[in-house]
Every structure is written in C-alpha cells, then in structure tokens.
Length: 106
Image 1 (cartoon, rainbow, N blue to C red):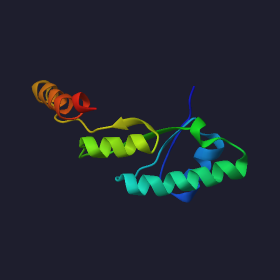
Image 2 (cartoon, rainbow, N blue to C red; image 1 turned 135 degrees about the vertical axis):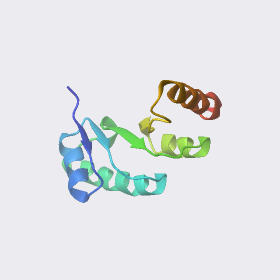
Image 3 (spheres, rainbow, N blue to C red; image 1 turned 180 degrees about the vertical axis):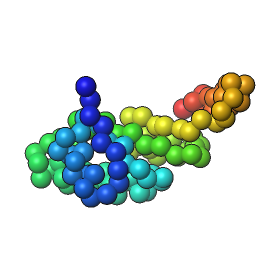
Image 4 (spheres, rainbow, N blue to C red; image 1 turned 180 degrees about the horizontal axis):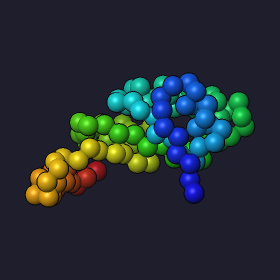
C-alpha cells in the first residue's frame, strides 16, 4: 500500500524523502511548492534516493489552465480540487464547468 506523506514543514519533507511513495505538501501556490520540492530533492540526495520516485500531489481551490501547467512543469502527478457544490445538481454543473474550462484545454 503506498504511503503518502502530507505536510509542508521541514519534518514533513524529511518524512516524505525517507518513507513516502507520495508527498502532498499543503501549500497553495506553485511557487511555494517549488521551494518545498527543492528541499525534498536535497533530502533525497542526502539519503541516496531519487526524488522522482515520490509521486507529488498538489491542491488548490482556484485553478486555471496556466496554474495547472505550472504544477505539471514541477512534476505534479495529481491535483486535487474542492467540491464545486454539495448537492447533486451543483456537483454535476461544477464538474462540467471545470472540465470545459480546464481539462478540455490541456
């Protein structure tokens, strides 16, 4: 079973480098993620581990195509988004809108 380490502190970075199959740092911009991934790379180098072996997940409430591409350029494998609504019709409409606005343009 894959172990995904969450967090954005130096200790979380060390845990992800040592034990993680995946890493989900709790940051809200690609710029902050870039800094954390640099620290992850340094820690992996110290341990003799390839940081590319750790699958990166990122999340953000507001998404646009450029932001998704910036995450993709950083090596993010998975993006999370919050639910666009909590009722069935709202969820359906919100996910269709996200698909049209983001997914269809990638």
